[in-house]
Image (cartoon, rainbow, N blue to C red; front, side, top):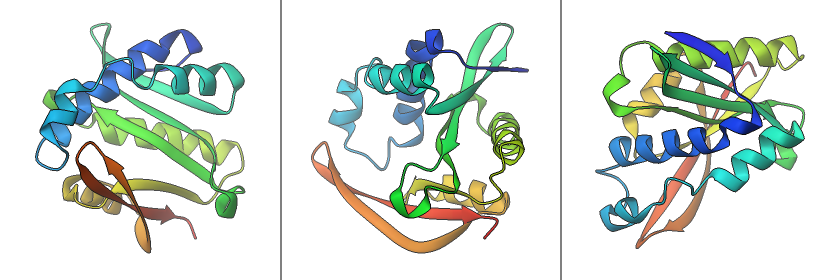
Length: 166
Protein backbone atom coordinates (compact mmCIF):
# COMPACT_ATOMS: atom_id res chain seq x y z
CA UNK A 1 0.00 0.00 0.00
CA UNK A 2 1.17 3.49 -0.86
CA UNK A 3 -0.15 6.74 0.62
CA UNK A 4 0.25 9.91 -1.41
CA UNK A 5 -0.86 13.51 -1.09
CA UNK A 6 -4.10 14.36 -2.83
CA UNK A 7 -4.20 17.15 -5.41
CA UNK A 8 -7.18 19.07 -6.80
CA UNK A 9 -7.03 16.80 -9.86
CA UNK A 10 -7.97 13.94 -7.51
CA UNK A 11 -11.33 15.48 -6.58
CA UNK A 12 -13.37 13.15 -8.81
CA UNK A 13 -11.41 10.10 -7.64
CA UNK A 14 -12.05 11.10 -4.01
CA UNK A 15 -15.75 11.69 -4.68
CA UNK A 16 -16.04 8.22 -6.22
CA UNK A 17 -14.20 6.63 -3.28
CA UNK A 18 -16.57 8.30 -0.82
CA UNK A 19 -19.69 7.23 -2.76
CA UNK A 20 -18.51 3.62 -3.00
CA UNK A 21 -17.62 3.61 0.69
CA UNK A 22 -21.00 5.03 1.67
CA UNK A 23 -22.83 2.32 -0.30
CA UNK A 24 -20.94 -0.39 1.58
CA UNK A 25 -20.52 1.05 5.05
CA UNK A 26 -23.92 2.67 5.46
CA UNK A 27 -26.15 0.16 3.63
CA UNK A 28 -27.91 -0.84 6.85
CA UNK A 29 -28.11 2.72 8.21
CA UNK A 30 -29.09 5.07 5.39
CA UNK A 31 -32.07 4.95 3.04
CA UNK A 32 -31.22 2.26 0.42
CA UNK A 33 -32.99 4.22 -2.33
CA UNK A 34 -30.89 7.27 -1.50
CA UNK A 35 -27.67 5.24 -1.61
CA UNK A 36 -28.55 3.61 -4.92
CA UNK A 37 -29.21 7.02 -6.51
CA UNK A 38 -26.15 8.68 -4.98
CA UNK A 39 -24.05 9.99 -7.89
CA UNK A 40 -20.35 9.22 -7.70
CA UNK A 41 -19.73 12.90 -8.55
CA UNK A 42 -21.75 14.12 -5.55
CA UNK A 43 -18.72 15.37 -3.59
CA UNK A 44 -16.77 16.61 -6.64
CA UNK A 45 -17.50 20.36 -6.25
CA UNK A 46 -16.72 20.33 -2.53
CA UNK A 47 -13.52 18.30 -2.88
CA UNK A 48 -12.30 20.38 -5.81
CA UNK A 49 -12.99 23.62 -3.94
CA UNK A 50 -11.31 22.44 -0.75
CA UNK A 51 -8.21 21.06 -2.45
CA UNK A 52 -7.77 23.96 -4.91
CA UNK A 53 -8.16 26.61 -2.22
CA UNK A 54 -5.92 24.90 0.32
CA UNK A 55 -8.85 24.97 2.76
CA UNK A 56 -8.45 21.23 3.23
CA UNK A 57 -5.78 18.71 2.35
CA UNK A 58 -5.88 15.03 1.66
CA UNK A 59 -4.12 11.73 1.29
CA UNK A 60 -5.06 8.82 -0.93
CA UNK A 61 -4.20 5.20 -0.19
CA UNK A 62 -3.43 3.11 -3.26
CA UNK A 63 -2.70 -0.53 -3.84
CA UNK A 64 -1.09 -1.49 -7.14
CA UNK A 65 -1.92 2.02 -8.37
CA UNK A 66 -5.64 1.70 -7.61
CA UNK A 67 -7.25 3.98 -5.00
CA UNK A 68 -8.58 2.15 -1.93
CA UNK A 69 -9.13 4.95 0.59
CA UNK A 70 -8.81 8.64 1.32
CA UNK A 71 -8.70 11.13 4.16
CA UNK A 72 -9.49 14.86 3.99
CA UNK A 73 -8.29 17.08 6.83
CA UNK A 74 -7.45 20.66 7.75
CA UNK A 75 -8.25 23.53 10.09
CA UNK A 76 -11.60 23.08 11.82
CA UNK A 77 -14.57 24.37 9.85
CA UNK A 78 -16.83 24.76 12.89
CA UNK A 79 -16.70 28.24 14.44
CA UNK A 80 -16.41 26.84 17.95
CA UNK A 81 -13.45 24.65 16.88
CA UNK A 82 -11.70 26.93 14.38
CA UNK A 83 -8.41 26.56 16.25
CA UNK A 84 -8.61 22.75 16.11
CA UNK A 85 -7.66 20.34 13.36
CA UNK A 86 -10.48 18.45 11.67
CA UNK A 87 -10.77 15.11 9.96
CA UNK A 88 -13.48 16.02 7.46
CA UNK A 89 -13.65 12.65 5.68
CA UNK A 90 -12.04 9.25 6.09
CA UNK A 91 -13.27 6.51 3.79
CA UNK A 92 -11.98 3.12 2.73
CA UNK A 93 -13.49 0.84 0.11
CA UNK A 94 -15.63 -1.80 1.85
CA UNK A 95 -13.53 -4.71 0.61
CA UNK A 96 -10.37 -3.09 2.04
CA UNK A 97 -11.78 -2.36 5.52
CA UNK A 98 -10.05 -4.03 8.46
CA UNK A 99 -6.76 -4.25 6.57
CA UNK A 100 -5.03 -1.24 8.18
CA UNK A 101 -5.88 1.24 5.42
CA UNK A 102 -8.02 3.48 7.63
CA UNK A 103 -5.45 3.39 10.42
CA UNK A 104 -2.65 4.36 8.04
CA UNK A 105 -4.67 7.22 6.56
CA UNK A 106 -5.76 8.49 9.98
CA UNK A 107 -2.24 8.36 11.40
CA UNK A 108 -0.86 10.17 8.34
CA UNK A 109 -3.46 12.94 8.60
CA UNK A 110 -2.99 13.30 12.37
CA UNK A 111 0.78 13.62 11.89
CA UNK A 112 0.24 16.29 9.22
CA UNK A 113 -2.15 18.19 11.50
CA UNK A 114 0.31 18.00 14.38
CA UNK A 115 3.08 19.30 12.11
CA UNK A 116 0.81 22.29 11.41
CA UNK A 117 0.43 22.93 15.14
CA UNK A 118 -2.93 21.26 15.76
CA UNK A 119 -2.70 19.25 18.98
CA UNK A 120 -6.48 18.95 19.21
CA UNK A 121 -8.52 17.28 16.48
CA UNK A 122 -12.23 16.68 16.00
CA UNK A 123 -14.47 14.89 13.56
CA UNK A 124 -18.14 14.12 13.04
CA UNK A 125 -19.32 10.53 12.57
CA UNK A 126 -22.70 8.94 11.98
CA UNK A 127 -24.00 7.90 15.40
CA UNK A 128 -25.54 4.66 14.13
CA UNK A 129 -22.29 3.51 12.47
CA UNK A 130 -20.88 1.75 15.52
CA UNK A 131 -18.03 0.19 13.54
CA UNK A 132 -16.72 3.65 12.71
CA UNK A 133 -17.20 4.93 16.25
CA UNK A 134 -15.24 1.97 17.64
CA UNK A 135 -12.47 2.62 15.09
CA UNK A 136 -12.08 6.24 16.21
CA UNK A 137 -12.29 5.35 19.90
CA UNK A 138 -9.58 2.74 19.37
CA UNK A 139 -7.43 5.58 18.02
CA UNK A 140 -7.95 7.82 21.06
CA UNK A 141 -11.02 9.82 20.06
CA UNK A 142 -13.87 10.25 22.52
CA UNK A 143 -17.45 11.39 22.08
CA UNK A 144 -18.32 14.83 23.44
CA UNK A 145 -22.08 14.33 23.59
CA UNK A 146 -22.59 16.94 20.86
CA UNK A 147 -25.00 15.80 18.17
CA UNK A 148 -26.42 17.21 14.97
CA UNK A 149 -29.32 15.71 13.04
CA UNK A 150 -30.28 16.26 9.42
CA UNK A 151 -32.44 14.80 6.67
CA UNK A 152 -30.81 12.46 4.18
CA UNK A 153 -33.02 10.71 1.65
CA UNK A 154 -36.22 9.67 3.37
CA UNK A 155 -34.67 9.40 6.83
CA UNK A 156 -32.99 11.37 9.55
CA UNK A 157 -29.29 10.96 10.33
CA UNK A 158 -27.48 11.97 13.50
CA UNK A 159 -23.78 12.77 13.63
CA UNK A 160 -21.79 12.85 16.86
CA UNK A 161 -18.65 14.85 17.50
CA UNK A 162 -15.52 13.00 18.59
CA UNK A 163 -12.36 14.73 19.81
CA UNK A 164 -8.76 13.84 20.49
CA UNK A 165 -6.14 15.75 22.43
CA UNK A 166 -8.37 17.88 24.60
